[in-house]
Image (cartoon, rainbow, N blue to C red):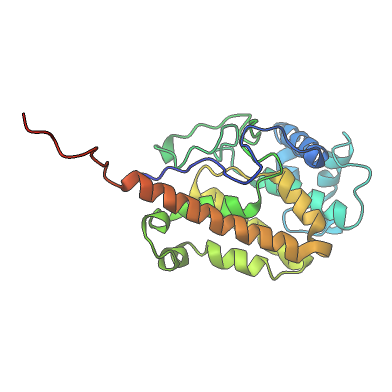
Length: 252
């Protein structure tokens, strides 16, 4: 059974609207990192920062982020760590995880996906103007990994199969160090599910806020996760309902 995913629905948001100004600097950083990932050797150098504190990354990683001004001059301390972490997560994504198109649902031919130089570049309209949280991306990955998650009325049993619900619960309780340790594994699960867009600019914004507003960010992730599951379950139920006849046929 194939599973299709509806577009994002959020009060006050349009999937085709312009991005909010609060994400402009983060979008620029993601775009600059994506450009670096197209340079031979740079993507590998950025991957070397995966899950590491800034002071533990190799010189090559610093060079990629600093020589061309990719890292903002204002990024210091925890902010610098967040930027390095997001750059490494972007570089660690397989190019087959296409982000240059709006969310299409599961691929019809997973083994036939082609690599593209723009694989890491999201298109306009892929994400909410105010940012698409990691919670929504995890929900879409969970649906791809277990289509029964939206086919059944009781989601609990199917969710246990994917483990993504447990991951987002665990992430919501982490301090900054714990969250940084968990993110590479969580993003690998998202990648393994198929074509799931990840809004790295929004993730960067959330990482920057985690130390001071963890509960607020975690609540938004959980809310987006469950609302996405429920929205897709309702859409699947509507698709599977038999069409209603307008009324009994009149005798000829």
